[in-house]
Length: 108
Length: 108
Image (cartoon, rainbow over all chains, first blue to last red; front, side, top):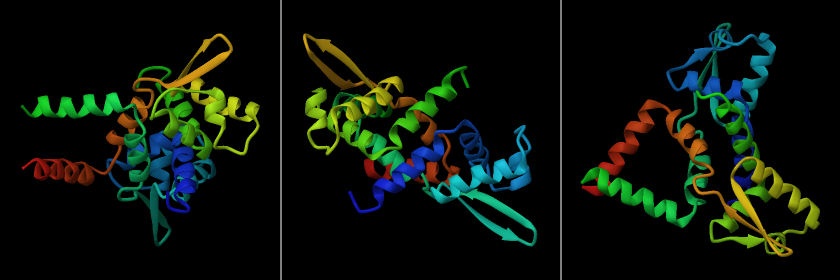
């Protein structure tokens, strides 16, 4: 494993281990949004939401950009790619075989 | 989302947000192992390793079975399936499209 990759994975998995942060990612998968738009569905103070966004940003899951007074967040392209790759790699060999078989059958 | 699914995801992502626990999963992807076998590569006390295994077991990532005095751990079949499904579902639409295209071309 490349140096730092372990810490990156720590941060990504840690960022996703929270229902509010996952809800933010779910919302951003539909498109970029401002902090106040992201805060709307939650009964939370704005600073708390900003804190959650900070965790996601430091993990590389989201990026933000400020235009005037509005900070807009979006998903990082492939921000969870290392996490997905890790999960795919470390499954039981039988499951990986079954998945390939499923794809094969599904494609007839 | 089904009730409880959020907490399950919390526990799985939390369990994987630690390099030692991921190393244990990597080892178990190659086959079942006893606590002492799992502890070998780590400069850690056995109780610490047992604690990490407990986190993984409560998250449903691993299961254990005791035969005589030896407790053997193995990966739970599809123990990380909900986490993988969540990650696959919440990506940028463009990435999902690119992946499908890649599969298509790869199978050309």
